[in-house]
Image 1 (cartoon, one colour):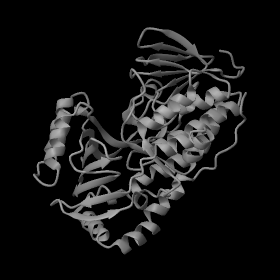
Image 2 (cartoon, rainbow, N blue to C red):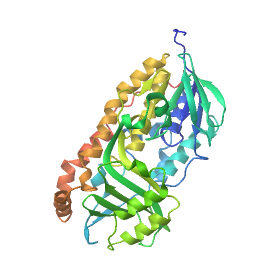
Image 3 (cartoon, rainbow, N blue to C red):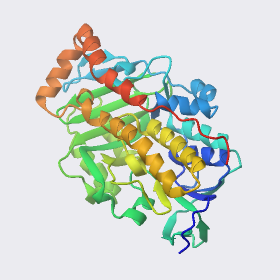
Image 4 (spheres, rainbow, N blue to C red):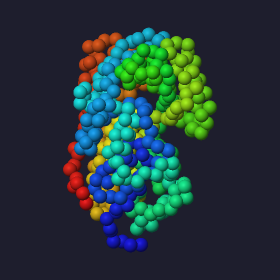
Length: 407
């Protein structure tokens, strides 16, 4: 084995969601030769809204994407909460709940962010759609990759930016269950016709341990629906069986109140159903040899934190920058994790620190939440001193370094 370190130039990035293309952008800017492999046939468009807050907003500004993303801002204006009987309890401005700063932070469709990243790359980066890593062999000098298509190629580095259920992480570090922190919630997301007159707002129905959500980005003919419930044990047995997923979700929402029957029916018929568990990834280390993880593959924060995309954008910037600053990839990976881990962990903590407003799991939590919502003055005081401040602090809890513009 050659023990002399040499600059790594050829980088394979697995995953073309958010972290992968953002990382490819910065690596290309620093002079690396980048290939992105994605198992889907193309970049996914549309989708639910994601937030770009705090440090992540500075990242997209440095990428030159801020004007485009401002234009794509969906500007949600209200979140209304509904009790178990379907009666309105009260409403909040989204930033009261999330800690976002109105007029500064951004909320955009996930697909609009993905498209902006893709266009920023132009044709400077190679994309391999409809393929995935089947095997990799890190011999210390290079990583020898076999793709599902049968193609074999060698790279200096491989980055797993392939999400919560990362295939790259499994190949290098082992089964997901070893690093998976289940947060006790199961959810199903889908779209359905906007028969509710919703625009720039969300409505959340809650009972103990269960929630149903309707969310509209704008006056459009379709809205996003979500059904979520608590469960002590993850339903791993349902992951490969769409019919079992639908039956499991429907069984948790038998009531004929509010819009629950319509949501359940839409979930059963949806051709875009997304079923998963709410969880985080907690790893002892984010790299092994010449392979490193980024985004949710390294440190999934869960959607309860609202910070998955923001932390992914920041991590991509830092990882690329440290690779540009260090000739030795081992030193670069260590610097990346040293800088990013505290930021990622503080944002992970948001998922468990204030989630009872959206997902009350006991009767006491639900009644206390509803009593608070009925008193607008109390809401403002409580959220100003608790969740919102904690959120803002976590969102901005990393000072972006200035890396060299090229190698």
